[in-house]
Image (cartoon, rainbow, N blue to C red; front, side, top):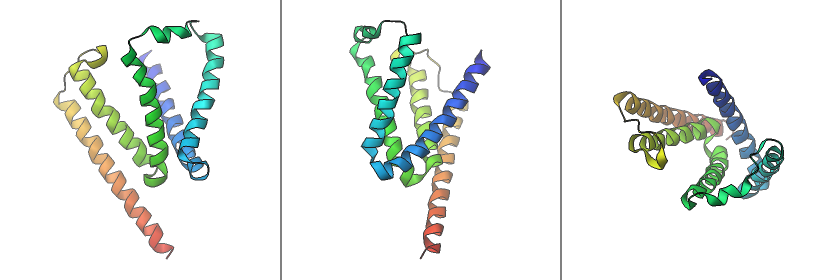
Length: 157
């Protein structure tokens, strides 16, 4: 089952990168907020239909959770909005690596301190090096994108 979840998540990453690229292009024509709205409207319609067929039948159960848990909806919206803003400026790979690095940093902190009722997994050297290497990868990808962009601009002058 673990391998299947890894493959599902891998496929999710592929779709996220494709979505980031398409949304970045769309935002140049329609606007950042408009593109983000379209994504959420489409997602809302898709999920409403999915709930009809596969849901637990307790949509109002959302209102019964601790209020701080509702912040996740805002955080997801903010992530998408920031991604749509970043892709046209720094490219898909730099945006995704930055997003993944941010996820890893906060994930390590959440695991280490057991925030949000998660299991406690201490920060060890392996995890610290993984974070360091991800940040180094982000640096080199961003610098490579910047250099490539400058070379392209110089050729058009």
